[in-house]
Length: 220
Image 1 (cartoon, helix red, strand yellow):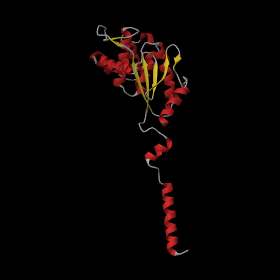
Image 2: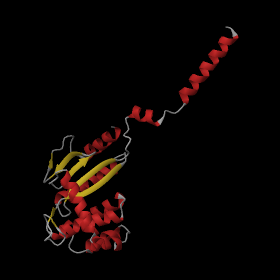
Image 3: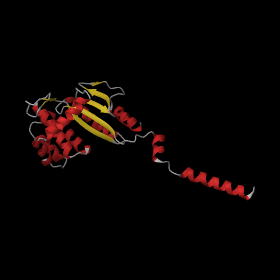
Image 4: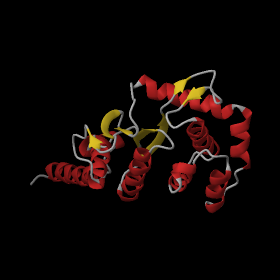
């Protein structure tokens, strides 16, 4: 083989070898694996703080969050109706104590925005859900169990910030036409409702079904 031909062949082999071991650009990797580019999958629960369906639903999703293997962005919003004549400016199905319970949970989330903290607080309240909003005692106990101060949460509740947060939360709920506690949205789509029993749950309602929905959404 002529010298020039050998040189060209060597260059070609070297180029192919280098390209073969080069990492794929991120955009190509994403296309190959169909991973969503906007990171965490949004999971939203729409509830009433003293509702047994909320207690059941959040217990299920505590298990879902333990098992899911992709990033999740969790949020909880509340069902209520504006009523300026009520103590907390909103009317809640289970009375004013439920409105206060909603506010306590929202203020805790506001002060401690990491869902690993605020969702644990909600789960702690759920253990004695009939006492939610009957003063601050239960909320203070749950904050203490998590090793977190309740002082800033109490400031949020008493300053009027809590009512403001409840208003924003109710607005989000109403924007989707949600009326039942507990309503589940995954990836901005209605996924399931627990109202005495599971309803409208295309894709199933077991823990592993919700995990699959979240992981499928992440894969795109």
